[in-house]
Length: 550
Image (cartoon, rainbow, N blue to C red; front, side, top):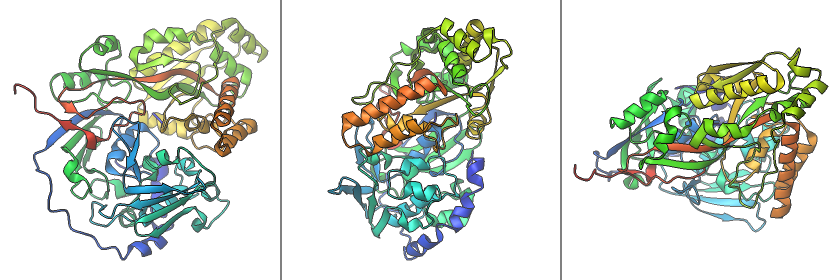
């Protein structure tokens, strides 16, 4: 997942159409569902408040349009899917599905929903809510950027790409109010993990139809997770409140959560030191870059690797980046060992793409530092010594770590290639929108894994993937990645993926930089937080202990 009160511009234009079009038939099924009253046995109202730094403000909280880790962090606590991760991010647990079975063919799942699952407006949660949500994601006119995550489902790709028009051909069926059957094209070992992703969360069709794209505003939103969206002050904070309708509300220890957004690293640290924050947050760049070494040694510091990679994307649809020799030269001109002192605990420098931590998978070696070879390739492309090479426009978001890395890259390209680079930064949301629209030459990108499998990274560069902002396309690459999805033998499957990654690094539509690491400060009174490489932190697992001696 790539690292606004209203949805993105893309979502704005389609949400109301989806609400009135694709959902209309499903609403007929839901029309007979009667709202229920809020549970009477609620937990005491004086439970603790948890305060943390969210980092960039979410661009949307609509599960169909979330593409980044920042929005996903909030949405995962508002919307619960069929399955959820445990606090350590190592095991999938029952969510809305009390249990599920894998079919004998290995390519079908039957999910049995909880009968006590209720929306925050009192509507029962039904299997139809999942059918509605998944069809909505795959509507070819909907523009959901993450729709490809559902492609393992039979008929999903064909429906999303407009090859078929009948949504009933999608392999998702509500067999009754509490039974959801899913048919896959072929066995997919990571499909259960997809069922814990925010894009597979159900939606309340009644709220969607009534409010259109505005259905995620605090006054309109209807959720089924452990928390509700109580308030959203643009540029300041989001406030979540414990959801009394949640099926396990009595086990939720927090009464309120305050997520502070768009604060500077200095303000975040000051707020933590003065007791205004309990956690400095999971996003990169939330602590002062020049103090990371010092802060990492504190007893309240949490430092751990993440399953993610930061890189620069080259827009291969534009010259000179359409020339593979230029792309390779830009990669070879970087001595990534110098990155170590720049990023500290925020990552591990790399020339590979897929991060470590994938079971039984070893990434092929990426390009080594070779300035002479880089200059030779640039000369072959007609730019000897950097002569006549146009000034590169390098776009990054405005967090200090990414700006610092960008200026180091620019200096390296100038020193070793004679190429000039202009670095410009924008707030994260504006930067992300520009990358999605392919409005850049070279841009900072990043991906935090949704599940620990290399396919979750390598599928990003399939020709038809919405996240392929490099606009690079190779039929052989597509073939290897797709064949891996049909390959049952694990070693053969991983070998295909390694060959695909080797091709990606050779063709160089990207400049890999570092694998993510995370550093944050966590107050010792916070219990239930567990570091994990997937960066999964459901707030329902957290509690605040009384301070000893207080």
